[in-house]
Amino acid sequence: MATFTQIYYHLIFATKNRRPVLAESRRDDLFRYIQGIAHRRHCRLYEINGADDHLHLLTHLHPSLCLANLVKDIKIGSGNWIRENAVFPGFDQWQDGYAAITVSPRLREPVERYIRNQPEHHREASFKDELRALLIAAGIDFEEKYLE
Image (tube, rainbow, N blue to C red; front, side, top):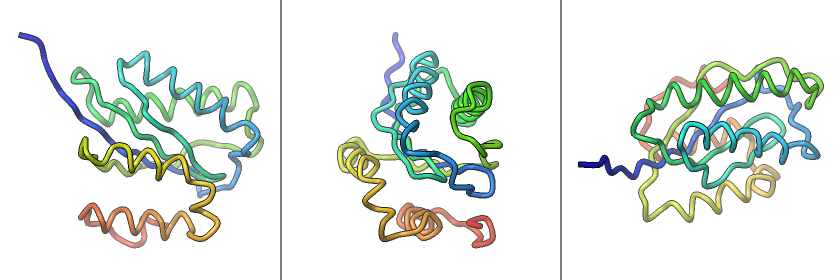
């Protein structure tokens, strides 16, 4: 019998020390590169977007992968690509850690819209406030010091 799954994750991670180095002019190149990493891991990336200091991804998790390995592959691969190609001056690395929130299939499209609208969203809310609200809404326990 085949393996059948439908596991969606809303992933969020930031640049080291939340440095605002992800210039909008090159983000689409970064997004395509990350999409390639997900594709090679047999994951479908439904949406990706972000701001100058963090990214949001909505992805399917292939049953052969554990979440931590997918995030590690994306962060290491994209970080190396950024540095090797001098895509974002001032980029050092991604911050340790990430947020991963499961998404119901019924909510996939609203989450896609939320991620697509990141630039507009961040005209009114900081990343810290956004992340706090998402963690609370998902019922994830956290310590405030880790939002710094």
